[in-house]
Structures are given as structure tokens and as C-alpha cells.
Amino acid sequence: MADTNVLIKAIERLDHRVTIGDVAAEAGLPLHEAQQGMLTLASEVQAHLQVSETGEIAYVFPKNIQGILLSKSWKLRWQATWEKVWRILFYLIRISFGIVLILSLVLIVLAIIAISIAATAASQQGDDRRDSRSGGGMIFIPRMWLGPDLFRMFDYRYYRRPAAQPASDSKMNFLEAIFSFLFGDGDPNADLEERRWQAIASVVKASGGVVVAEQVAPFLSDLGQGWSKEFEDFMIPVLSRFNGVPQVSAEGGIVYQFPELQVTAQERKRISPPQFLQELPRKFSNASSGQIMGAIALGSANLIAALALGSMLQDQALVASAGELAIFVSSIYWLLLGYGSAFLGIPIVRYFWVQRQNSKITRRNQEREQRAEVLAQLDDPVREKLSFAQTLAGQTIVTAENLAYTTETDLTDQEIANKDKIDEEWRQLIERRQSS
Image 1 (cartoon, rainbow, N blue to C red):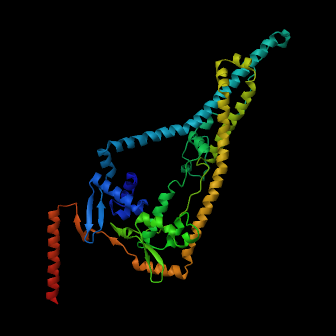
Image 2: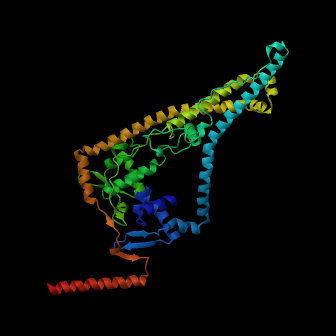
Image 3: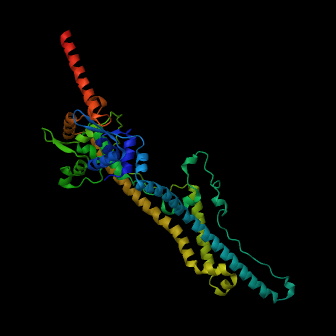
């Protein structure tokens, strides 16, 4: 069964008065799934049915569908609560990678300072045994360059945007940017299948419910090879999804008619469908260039400091004299070094993977664009099929004027109204005859 949220969003976009074909086209759902989901949803929220004199059915849903469902179902209330909790948890997960990196760098630096102090103290004790004319010892704490100011890196004002760049271009904070630098920001084509079927349905509806295979091909990924492509087998999933039927012209051309997509609840402004399905290229990160440079600087500082600490940890006696913090850091050193290495290694691998994926996306987009160009250079067979398709194209609108039945009013009232309507039509017919 179709996802209830998908159905609700489609119904709301269509202004709550819809047919099954309207919702299937808007959401890109198979007709049988849309039909089952619509019937269940209509029952839950007590939607009204409107049946035209020719038998087409329109559904009229209340404006507050989501509120009605939440008031009746504990499961939906729990789901809505969990979605809010999960957004918070996922945000904490996103920023945790940056927090761990900062803690790692802080621990490493503190351990280096502690070991340096212990080494200086040991050196000073040796100097005390020398000639007192040496003037005594001096504690030396090495200064390590850690790139940008460690504390200013987390000030939201640190990365100044250029004057020409709008503030809305980068909305994530630095900790979120670290997660984006590591793992990216998700697949921009996660909804590709949904967009594919929505586009195909929009092409069908814009063509009056009848299309030729050449109109649908620019939205499909694989058309097959050989006879499979020649006989247009790639249209079978489209026919199955939207209950289409093939029609053959006198010249032998095949067109595809979708009767249920030819019925709509109200006349809507036709939006020109796209010429072909275009996949979006992947981005390495949505973080600003300043945030990415900051993440690289922080990760590099962490890795360099970890390597420096590794050389200092060779003297375990010195580590033991440096205190409990140095001993603790020594015990998790390989974990810190591994995290620092992975922090820079994962983005490098992912960068080349993104480039490879984008080259494949570009190739697929070019193939679909080439199929769309066929419609701009029509040959005689395609022109004949399009001409035949126009003879079958049409649209049926279920209006309030041609209703035979609706659940919005009592059946007796409807029978009286229908009787009055028939009597009025007879009266007008008699008057016209008498006047003629």
C-alpha cells in the first residue's frame, strides 16, 4: 500500500478534490496502490465521494487530513513524535564527529605539554648538579603551530563570506560542516524514481492521456537491446503502473492510452513537462569553502600533533612521570591516530568516488537528452503515431454540475434535486417547442 504521507501531500497539492488518476499522476504511484491507499484514507478521514453521471468518481477530502489522522491513531502520533526526536538525535550524531576531533586534538596537545614539562623538569634536575654558575634552569614548553586560531575556528563570525555571496548559501555551522566534509550531504537523486514517474505521468496528462513510446523514452534508464527495444518492451512497466492499454493505428503504429489518467476532478493549469529526466550531480560538500579549509586545517593539525606525540611516547618512563593524563592518552594513542588518519583519508577517497559517479550521471543525462531530440526531428512513422494519438486524446472533468450522486448530502435530498432538475429541463424543452 502507498505511503500515507505521500498520498496526503499529493492531495494537499491538488486542493483536496481529486480522482485516483490525479493522485497517481501527482505522486508518481502505481494506480492500484493509489486506489487502495485512497480508499483507506477516505475511510479514515470520512472523505466524501462524488459520482458523475458517466460513472467517474471524485474524492473530496477535508482540509485538515493530518490533524484528523493524528487524533484517531496512536501509531501516527508516536510516529510524528519519533520523527521529531530522530531529527534531534541525527543532529547530535552530525556534530559528534567534530566534537570528537576537537577533543582528540585537545587531549594530544595537553599530553604533549605534560610530557614536555616532565622532560624539562628532568633536564633541570640534571642541570642542578652542574656548576651553580650556570644560573639555574629554565622551563621550556614548545610552541606548536596548529593552523588557524583553535578557538576562533568555532566562532560563527570567523569565516567571513564574500560580499557577493548571500548568507543563505551556507547555513550549517562548523561542526555540521565537519560531518559534511567527511560524509557529504546525501544523495541528491534519492527521489529519482519518484521524479521519474511524476514526469511520465505529467507527459501523459499533457498529451491528453495518450502517448507514443518516443515521448516516454527520455524518462527511462534502460530501453533494452535488439528486438526488446524494437518492440518497445520498455513500455510494459509504464502500462502496468498506470493501467494503460496499447492501441494500434490502421498503419500499424502503436500508441499507449491511459484511460484513468484522462479523468480529473477539476480543470487544472497544464504545466509543460520536462524534456527528459535529468539526474542531479553529486556535490562533495555543501559546506562553504572556508569551512572546508577549516576542517582540513583542524584535521591536519590533529594528525601532525598525533605523529609528534607518537615520537614522545617512546620513552615510557617519561610518560609515567608526566602524570595520569599522559598515561591515559598513551593507552588510546592508536585510536587517536586512527581517527586522525581516517578524518583526512575518507574525504580523499570520497572525492574521487564523487567524480566517478558524476561522470556516469553526465553520460546517462546525455543519453536521455538524445532520445528527447528524436521528437524535435520527427520522421514519418513517429508523425503518424502522434497524429493517431491525437484522435484518442481527451479529458473528462468530474464537475459539480454533472454529478449523479454525492455522499455530502442525504440521498433523499439528492433524489428531490435530481427530480427538480429533470422537471426544469422538460419545462425548458416544452417552452422552446411552443415558441418555435
